[in-house]
Image (cartoon, one colour):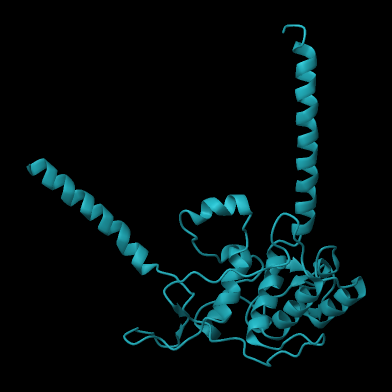
Length: 273
């Protein structure tokens, strides 16, 4: 009897230990959105990527870097659809710090081979302004995600759902609210229902009418959040379209090869049967 009691208490303690972090890490699941690049045959919407780039340039780049993306990527196939001249013009607007032949620090206009520069000289300078260093946005759409839990992650294998990152970013940008009664929000903190712990250091970056679109698209927070999330997905995976095309070609090859191997096996072993 004593052994059963000890085992029961041990099991209950283990469950409590597992449950406590789950409550502490409670995070509201963002709504699942429809994306042009979803699924095995999806591809990026050039117009949406261009709108998302405009939001990044006018709003996000003030605080966030994108140091793993080069200006030349803007003109690559499957991306925002900029021409090489347009990408070069975007690069020329950037100020790049360089070292001249004498070893002295200089500043020049950007070139296609350059990467998107950081708005701060170093991490300490970023922390001095914001308290925390704003994260680099190069792989944000892959790094920021949420746990789907069982059994959804099993279904995701078959449905090829890989858009947790863009869904989370779009929801996060619209998730700012007044904290509920009793929620202790620290100084300079902002309540966001989709952020883990609900306390984020970044104030609401977007609002209706903030960025002017030239193509007549709605200038709303909902549209802004989708466009910049799609652009960040492209920044994290600029060769997604090529990867899907190669994957489809490989699947066709494997199906044909399997058929050839099957009929070859039947031909070789037909005499034995």
